[in-house]
Length: 74
View 1: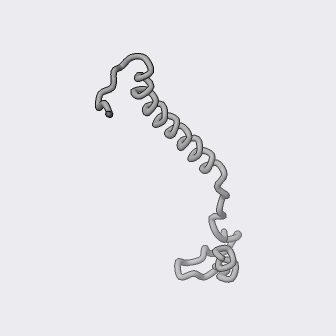
View 2 (view 1 turned 180 degrees about the vertical axis):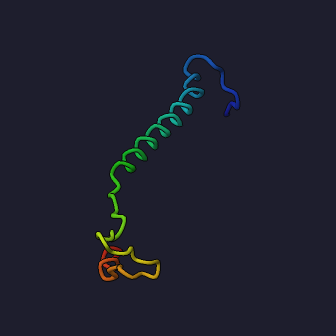
View 3 (view 1 turned 90 degrees about the horizontal axis):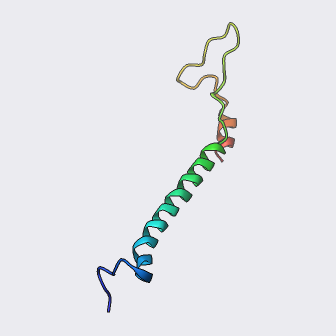
């Protein structure tokens, strides 16, 4: 038979403490994993930068090397 409210002493104390420890450990592992992932992301270049005397490419895609972009995404 299962008790809904086990006593809070002796070996039954594990039934009260263990779930809290498991949740805390899972949160800690998730935190560490997310921090490790955030530090290993490769930095993507901002795109082609105009040289001195050049105008920046407009939003229509002029100045974009589409072959390089497609290869990067494949």
